[in-house]
Every structure is written in structure tokens, then in C-alpha cells.
Image 1 (tube, rainbow, N blue to C red):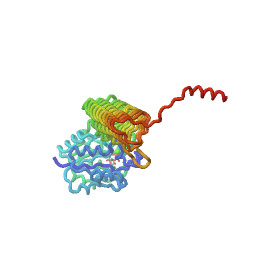
Image 2: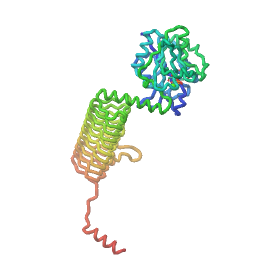
Image 3: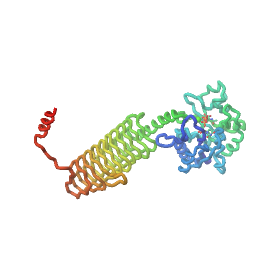
Image 4: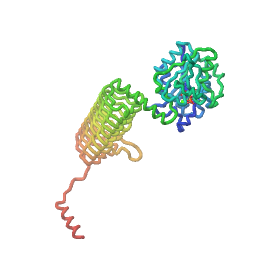
Length: 463
Ligand code: UD1
Ligand code: CA
């Protein structure tokens, strides 16, 4: 097989997106739109991948640089032929086939590209075009064939006759060329058309005039070739991608109860027999083990969740690690750098930040634990607060194994509670507590016999 280089076109002005950001950098299931097509190009063995961007798309330039990808700049958006010509210098010494893809068509699968390029290679074609038949051909370039079904040309919608507009087979925007012929022939493309642009699609007519073999291969599924021009298209594309992602998880053993209302970013890993309930959002680089339950409305970003964890409804977890069989929520919040041990419990309205709950530790209700370590099996009562910040710096609270923290305790950090110590409810703890001790700081409870009646009598006599 001859070698393959990919040119990804992304220099269009994207005016319909109405955004200050480059269109292809908008988020699609946790990744920039353009990253999908680049990945597929790499998967089919593309030796070089060059992205063509506009001079004003500095954000895209920066992204490509950070991702270690080659880029070429098209000085002015003069059309798709001119865009490909901008990559000529970069690909100067390349010999083989050049696959042209659009940066705003993210759902194309490697299988489709593979089948298409295989057809082009096997026919030793100078040019191949991947066609499709969408429900509405709208603004796409029409594939004009003769009576024998042989391709004659591609005509852009704006230049098409009434009869040509009726053609339903259209150019997907994916084309493949012999590299030498491509760069030689681009110079022959003119701009005498409705848009005054240099059309890449004119190369079909040019190749046929030269009697060179041209392949037009129709994709079975047009949905994967739909492009993104507006934010509406972006949302529709996301819908299709979400279904694809969710189906993949389901077919590998993950229980997803509602395929349309479960949002899982691309790249998230989930183990078998884990159940995900509707309205969960699982994003970033999250990894979830097997036999977990993720209830309704849970938001998880960049977390590691080990096997058998139960995350109850409406909990929000970010950059945290939850070990096996822990129970979180409902309504719990794990802020970054929290570590939850095996079989630990974090209950409702508990907020953790940089907090390590060791194996079997519990904080079941209405609590804030920040910059803290809670020892194994320690129990943190309702309404406990670590006062970790004095307005200038943050300090640690360290609670030993098997300690028992009474409800409504405040720990003024830095402070240490020894193993097995007991803190009486309602205490404000400012000093370290040795292992095994009881410590409490509340005022002794007093009594005043019959006070209520005496007060009542006094108040009434004043009226
Ligand atoms: C193009 C095709 C059309 C096809 C359709 C599929 C041409 C002339 N037409 O039309 O046959 O049906 O795609 O989606 O090729 N771009 C540049 N520089 C430019 C112009 C465009 O990099 O000067 C990039 C765009 O960013 C985009 C791609 O090329 O990624 C396609 O350009 P666009 O203007 O969207 O072409 P269409 O009119 O949709
Ligand atoms: Ca387009």
C-alpha cells in the first residue's frame, strides 16, 4: 500500500457559528470537534496529518502546536482548492495519497474512511470522492453521473441547474488524491463560479478530461458525515455522538437506563455491570469500575471510581478517587483531591475538599471537611466543620482511626485528634486531643427551676 497523508481543512471563517472561538475547537463530548477526525485519520495509518487553518485562528494554532500536529496557514479563505494548496509546502516531499477531510465533520468513523480509501487504492484512482445521500441535499455539491452511472463532475449547489439540484447523491467533503497529481492540478482550478472561490471539487472534471481514473464511493450512513456549521448542528452532532457512545458502553456490558438522557464524554471508561441512571453526566478522564451504581443527576468529572461504589442521586464529584464499595450521597459534593477509602460513607450535604476519608470512615450528614484526613472507621457527626482557612493560609485537620466526632464540632486547624478519641457534641476544638481521650469545649449545662413561669408572670404584669 502507498503511504497516506491527511489534510484537514479548517480555515473557513465559520461565520454561522457566531463565536469568537474557532468553530473546530468547540467542545463535543469533552473534546474539541477537530480532535475526532484527526484521531480517525491516525487510526487508518495516516503517516502525516496537516491541519489547514486561517491566519486569525491563533487559538487553533496553539491547540495544534500543543497536540504536536502539523499545521499550514491559508492566507485568505479563497476556497477549498486554495486551502489544500496551502498544505503543499508542508507536504513537499511526501509521495502517496492525500486524504482531504473537513475539521467540522467529526463523526466519520475509521471503518468508513478505510473502506473508501481501499476502493481508491484498489482502483489506482487519481481521485476519489466519498459521497452520501442525506435526506436533504441542501447546500451540498451534487454528484453528476452519466447514464452508465459514471461520475461526470461535481457541481456546487449555488452553480447547479434546477435538474442538477434534484440529484440526491452529494459530495461529503472527503476526497482522496494521488499527491503528485493533486498539487500539480490545483494550479488548473479557476474561480469562475457563483461564489468566486477555488473549488476543490473542480478537480473531478479536470481528472476526467485527462482520462484519469476517478472513484465515487457512496457511504452507507450519511449521518456520520454531517458537518457542523451552526450551534444547532453542534447540538445535533452531539446527540448522535451521545447515542454512539452510550451504545458502545451498553454493548460492552454497562447498564444505561435511558440512552437519550445520559451524558458520557468520549474517552470515559466504565466497567461491566455498572448501572447508570438517567440525567447522569460523566465527563473528562473519568474511569469507573464494575458493579457500581451511578444514580440520577450525578455529575462526575475526572474521577477514578473503583468497583462496587454506589453514588446516590445529585452528587457532584470532581478530580477525586473513590475506592471500592464506598457509598456517596445523595447530594454529596467531592471537590478536587478528595480520596474516599473502601466502604467509606459520605452522606447528604457533605462537602469535601482535599480530604482523605480512610477505609470505613463515615461523614453522613451536613458537614464540611477541607484539608483533612479522617482515619479508618472514624465517625464524623452531623454538622462538623473543619475551619481550615484563617483568611491567609490553609491548615490540616487530622483525625485518627476509630475516633468519634460528636455532632456540631468545629475543628480550628491545624489540629490533630488521636486514635479512638471522642469529641463531645457542640465542641470547638483548638488543641490537639491525645489518643483515647474525651475532649469537649462546650459550657456546662445549667438549670433554673421554674424560670419559664416566673418570666411569664413578669412579662404579663408589664402589659
Ligand atoms: C464543500 C464542498 C461541497 C461538499 C461540502 C460537504 C467545495 C467547493 N465544496 O462545500 O461539494 O458537498 O463541502 O460539506 O469543496 N475551508 C477552508 N478554506 C476555504 C474554504 C473552506 O479551509 O477557503 C474549509 C472549511 O473550514 C471547511 C471545509 O473547507 O472545513 C469546507 O468548506 P465549506 O465552505 O464549508 O464548503 P461547503 O460550501 O460546505
Ligand atoms: Ca461546510
